[in-house]
Image (cartoon, rainbow, N blue to C red; front, side):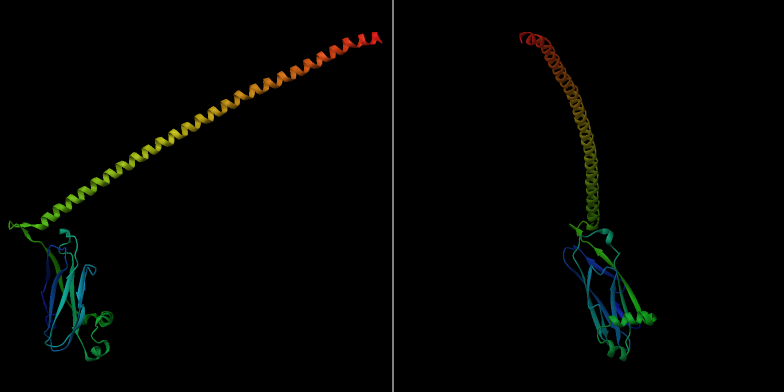
Amino acid sequence: MASLLRVDPPTELVFNGPFTEVSEKKIHLANVSDSDVCFKVKTTAPRRYCVRPNNGIIETGKEQDVLVLLQPFEYDPQDRNKHKFMVQCMQLTPEEKANYGSNTEPLFKDVEKSNPERILDTKLKCTFQVEAKNGQGTDRSAVGATGSLSEMQRLETEVSQLRQELSKSKEDNARLSQSNATLQLELSQKADLSTNAKAPGGSKSSVATIILILLALTCGAALGIWCAPMVSGEL
């Protein structure tokens, strides 16, 4: 890219913490070629950064500042050196300038498909730095790492407690289910005993009634037999 654009900084964007507010950096682009150059800026973390402008045209001998805004976030030392930027550029023909205007985003897409060799690029990595504390050279990234570790341990402890509570709840539920089944069995047995107890009583009552009826009939017949002669004699 040295023959088209000079990029400053050339290899790295350094953001200084704390990251509780928007952090701002600039990428300075200078056209060092003898023709117009179009550029495009890409990042591996588009949700974390705002880039203005992210594409455009730089005429011969002109310069352009690209503003990179890092959005506020909770700093994690593990994020260092993972985010990257790439500045792409290529020579711009008069026809392309007339057809695409100042928005070169569609032009880059078309050239990437038809002739990607035209596109040159420069890669920049992102580095997050934190201040020393109390002038003692204490890197706050180390503090952040300790805080992150403590937070992880706390979460693991909470997860373990939740698992124990869930296991206890399952055991309690199993005991309640067993108790319910036992109660239902006892109620069923008592109902059977009650039914069996009533059935013989009913039979005895029926037998006694039949016996009384038979005795009444027998007595009636006997009285009839004895009373008949007496009536007959009187007549």
